[in-house]
Length: 194
Image (tube, rainbow, N blue to C red; front, side):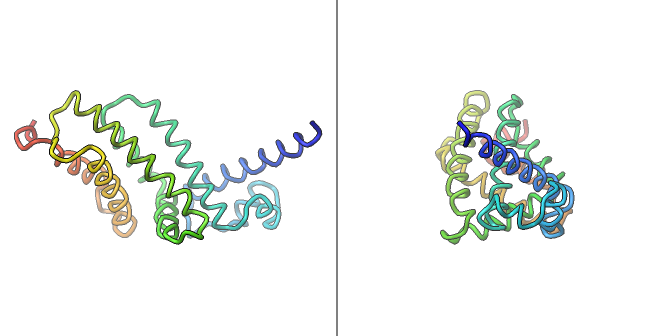
């Protein structure tokens, strides 16, 4: 029983650090934020902050995990058929987190990088969720059926990731319109004008 107290305090401090990092990266950007600023927000030193994580990359990976988990909860609460628009709007409102995501996704190609496991788990989960969304849409909307929903899901995720990268370089790119266009491609030609 005596070990629970310090463990719970440690977990609470770790969560506080992740929440502070998430807020700071969202507001100030990934490249413009130092971990010292995160440590200061949490009233600890930089070595104190790093005590809770294996490395800077581990901390950044855990920030992405937290972002994904909180976004997943918000998405489950939404019932509108085109929830993807809200996801894109959230990304546009937090460019620092989009930048962090893109940077960590590229680094995650290395199996030894701390983000590798996160992305290896994330993409199958995302494909499953998008596949389910597509199947539900098939019940209410005429859509292409010559490509299986599992492959369409991978395609839509690739479009989302790619348009985010383009948007980071050129903020005039309309991410929401691009996704609307991608979804419109799933409709049969006679339904495109509806």
